[in-house]
Length: 167
Image (tube, rainbow, N blue to C red; front, side):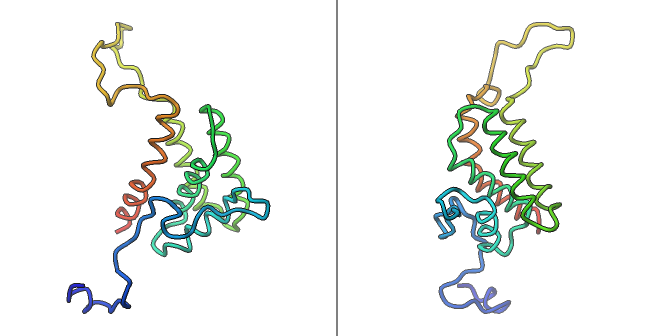
C-alpha cells in the first residue's frame, strides 16, 4: 500500500480503497435475492446492491437490479424482455416512499433497452435512394439474443462509467 493513501486515511488490513465493481452478484456474495418460494426478488436484489456498495447511487442500483433480473430470467422475444422490465420496475417503485431516483434509473434503462432492441437506424439519402451496400460490424443489426448478451456483459462497464461520472 502506498504511503500517500495511508496518510489520507488509514485502511484496515485486508481492505483496499479502490471502488469494487461487481461483474456478477456472486462475486461479492450478494447473489440474486430470492423470496421464500425461491423466486427472484427485485426489491431484495436492489437493496443488496445498495448495501454492498456505499458509492452506488439509487438509479444505478436500480439499473443493476433490472439487469440482474434479465440475467436470471430467460426471454425469447424483445417484447417479453420489455414486459419483464416494466413489471419489475413497478415492483421497485412501489417498494420505496420516494420513487423518483428509482424511476430515473428504470426509465433510463428502459429507453436504452428499447433503443438497443430496435437496432441501428437505416441510413440512406433523404430522397429515398438505396441504402449503402457496405455495412461495417458496428452497423450490423444484432439478433435479439446477441443484443441481450451484450447488455448483460456490459453491466460492469455501465457501473464503472456511472461511478466515474460522479467524481
